[in-house]
Length: 171
Image 1: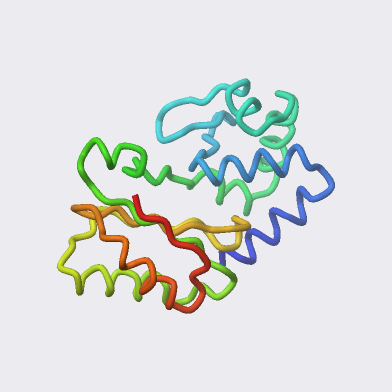
Image 2: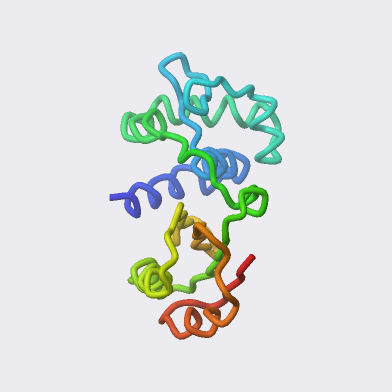
């Protein structure tokens, strides 16, 4: 369903690069459109200026994008139901003495999360959080795994043996 919807979004906005950047940024950040036609992150209203700055577009592109979305029932249903994913612990993991594993995946991404978590579990390490970027929306999607404790570097070679893994970083 999401792939077909993403194709619809691309088709609807491909002639308008600024509008396409707006919808990509909204999806990336988990921003939705409320019944009032305003942009929200959860229940926090996001100003047109802030979104325009983040998407590197003129504020008018925000208004026109929202109008196009509101006029299309399917798109409005999509963009009115987006929910932010929550806090990604990656940037504060060091402060919390947690481990971070970043795995870049190629076009073959099926089973990478399962294989990765199995390797980590075999080492007796608990996973606090896993976040996977969408392979349809990102050029070089990352799987970010936050662990209860830092993971040893020797696991990098094991991760690289997983089909579809192109790069591994451990922090």
